[in-house]
Image (cartoon, rainbow, N blue to C red):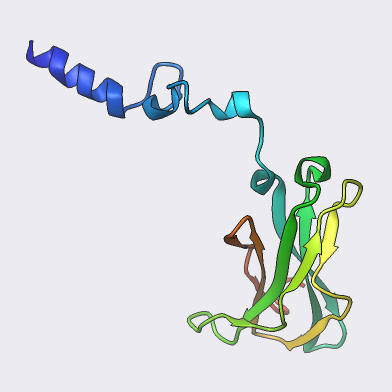
Length: 145
């Protein structure tokens, strides 16, 4: 009797044999495989770093949309952030730029101008989609670029 109660409790909160969480198995919550991918799963942050001199790099924030038809009409706000040291705070290097996703375009940049950074600083692209802010990979300027 005791094992039956424990197993029943695990079935409600745990994971079903199919690998779908128990709370997602109800009719109200369809499995992600049935619903298809969401737009945020098809968007990623990139960065463009170009060498301008021995100790300076031009940096542009970019966002890549893997499935533009799925995200068509969505607004993505893109900006570049930097920090001077590994343990410092992140600061916006530019005003956020809003772009609207078109069905035929995959790469979006945060403005036409690049920002110059000295070696040793850290940069990454941040973007906002559907009210959630996402951050890309951190890069140290002049380390391998």
